[in-house]
Length: 230
Image (cartoon, rainbow, N blue to C red; front, side, top):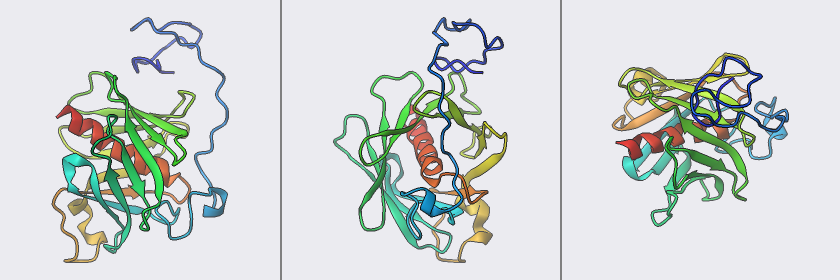
């Protein structure tokens, strides 16, 4: 069990307040959350051929202006499958995840005041999907958590020492479900000579069940936090 306020581990699950920060540990009973599906039909936003198609195992994130959060999302064949569009005049640094036709598939919002650089992932109707937080005092090996709307932690992303490289772990099963690396680390996967690897990152998903929308939003939120920090 971890404190929802400071992120520190709580040994005694029966205590009501965190011994590290003093915050309340009481929360409503979590409802079973739907993180996985057997087919695109079970998740209406996972359509065949769409940005969040469960058959996609690679996402290439290529931002035209890396710090601004806008650019293209490609597959391993260098085909554009979606776009990232930052609303420049948005106070909360809003980034839209768009399908190829411009339809908004999800949005990422930075919280105005947050010591942990919290980012909210929402659907097109502004309903909360998940919240991403950075663990306090994790500088050299940054650690991030993705929580459900009720504050229950679903995923953890641990970075390597002084590098933009992450493994994403499902906390309910303990399994690594995705990896994030500079795209040139997986150069042999992509069509030779067609991809410019400069400032380009690849999300590699290791199963055909995990919600692509959540994983893609997790990676872009981490990028947003790290650039705000730097």
